[in-house]
Length: 225
Image 1 (cartoon, rainbow, N blue to C red):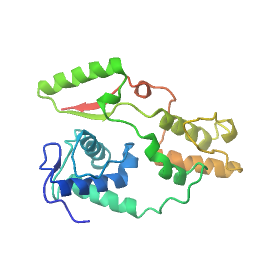
Image 2 (image 1 turned 60 degrees about the horizontal axis):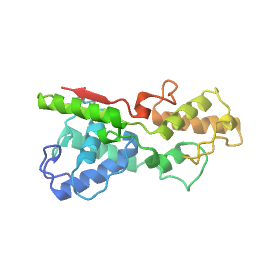
Image 3 (image 1 turned 120 degrees about the horizontal axis):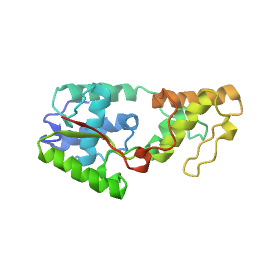
C-alpha cells in the first residue's frame, strides 16, 4: 500500500484519502489495541486519534503519543509493517465456539476496551473531564491510554488463564450469556491448549481480575507531559 502524502491525526492536514488509508491500516491491527474497528470514511475524529495514540503507545514505545502520523515518519512506517505482518496471518477458520486463537480473532471486535472519557461511569466521567480539561488549559499534553475496560473481555482473560494453568476445569467455568464460547474441547490437553492460545494473544502474565475500577468505569490510564 502506498504511503500517505500529508500528515494525518491530531493537528494534521487530514487529507481524506490519506485518512482513509490510515484507518484501513489501523483496522488491520485494531484488535491488538483492544479497540473497535474504525469506519474507513476518510474523516479524522476523536476515535481515530485515540487509535493512533494507542498504536504509538503499544507498537512504537512512545510514552507520550502525539496522535499524529507524518509521511515517512516513524509511526506510519511502523503501522505499515504491523499491518503487513497482520495480513500474513492465516485467515480465521470457519466460525467455531471452541476456545482458542481462531475464536478470539473471529470475535475480538465484540469485546473492545475504550479510551473515551464519555464511556466512564457518570459521576467519575464528569470529574475526569474537568481534570483533563484543567491539565490541558494549563498547557499539559494529556494522552489517554484506557478508560472503561470491557467486562466480558476481562471474563475471557480471567478464565483462559485459569484453564491454561490448570487452576480450573473447563466444565466449571460459569456460563456467560454475553459470550458464546466453549472452553471444554472434550480433551483436557486440547482445552488447555485452546485457553493458552488466548492467554498468549492477551499477553497475560498474571491472573486477570474479574473486577476493577477500570471495568466499573471509575479509572483512567493516561500520560501527562
